[in-house]
Image (cartoon, rainbow, N blue to C red; front, side, top):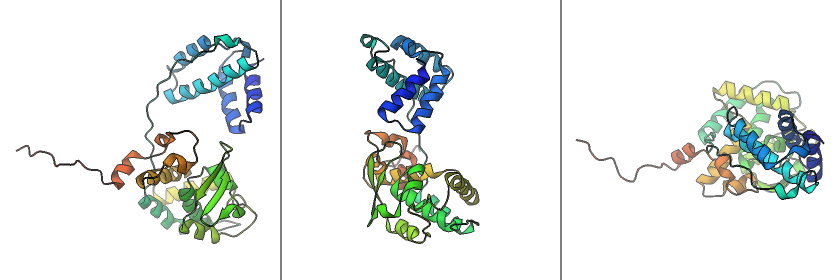
Length: 272
């Protein structure tokens, strides 16, 4: 059995998303192995060699995926289960996420009226709602396109996350609800029935260019997590992650320090 066939069988068994299957297939195409060839030593050798030309984060993800495939191959009796052991560690540098501040988001909102076009909904009105809802909920782009009007109950919205398939309750602030109410209804979905993914990404790029900023919808997700941290709330829970400690991938430490006005407790000593 080829490694790609094993990956497809694994995804089918565990109900993996199409995106996860695509990641597995990209990795498997790198490796001229059969499923029966998998061993911890073989994987360790690949990981060591990969660190010479790939980033530590990429190799870390490869370690995780190959570990899953090795365990599944043992469960399917394609390899001897007695060979299983922990794979070699891959150390990676902690990330340094960048998020938009409230001032940045206000700048983007002020530029929205300058956007022209939009057949089903004026792009300015649509992008204003997109910014406010994305920040308030912290949802991923795919989930934002799928949320529906009937999922809203007061200030809460219950969604099933596309990536994890887990239910997650998000909070919609008053501004986000008002922006949603200003959108025309073309179907059950709030955004997905007004614009497709590619056009949404194009409008986001236009908006950032007009504002003289760089970034994407991911920055809004990070902003929500960062301001949750500033408010003393759990950013991991705010984003709907199941794994504790995921906030390190989203919280902008510089922005937290700036908003909290973190300063030395005492002034530097006078050098004179």
